[in-house]
Amino acid sequence: MKRIAVYPGSFDPITKGHEDLIHRSLEFVDQLVVAVAVNVAKQPLFSLGAR
Image (tube, rainbow, N blue to C red; front, side, top):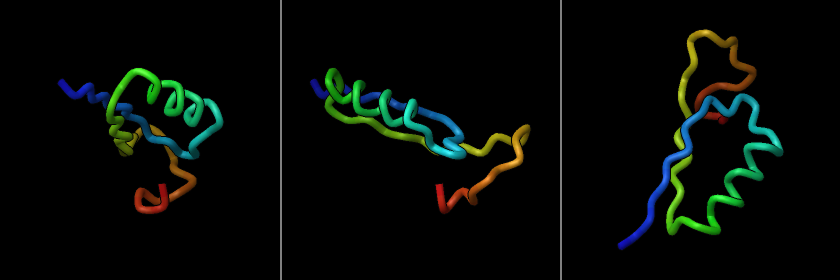
């Protein structure tokens, strides 16, 4: 069975910490979905499309 994980976040901006979690998670899942979300409580630096 394929192991799939979802990593949701606003990623605005994406940081080295985000990248580290992405790379480390790939050691124990077959597929990782990075879900870029809108957080209405934050003033974004980048557009949703740019993220």
